[in-house]
Length: 262
Image (cartoon, rainbow, N blue to C red):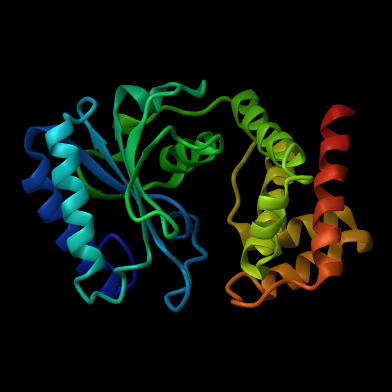
């Protein structure tokens, strides 16, 4: 086990605890544990960011072990740890991580808004696969490049376009608009679109702040203010101003037009 995978002592402590307990719980099914997201990409904020980790398993987990895993995460959520509500996790078989096409297979996952769920991997998981291969951080198990494979540029671009098209189909949905009206969700959409544009242009992954600053220079004044306000509001609890919500919808449409023009 890598006992100091990050520069942050408190993060390392909770990762060591989680890895030790998960190895004991999963036994021979446990192949490795790796960090992606901000801890891998270099823009981690100890006051605000989540810990994003992937546990690679040897196969799909049996139902009884999934129930034990659910109970494990429920206990951790009640543990009083400062990270109890700030982890996102996925448990995915090694073989599934080599597939770039979306599937309906459901895997155990933990998200901030969903403490434990069985669901297919999100459409943007090609981004996570790329991050894991290029700069994933080992907590336990072999080095990342021994398990993960490179993601082809066309697969990254396909995933980027799919995200935009998914949101384009949602912009008239009252439920989605209610979700997007929250400042942090509106900011998430804008910053993800910046990352999408970066992927489309470079076939590489950047952190959201890095992609945002790049997009400001690339897109120019028309979108620069919206991006700046989204960077400032990505952890805000209030609703976004209506003007920013409408600008966000316009940015989705603009991105969709750019993709169609390619």
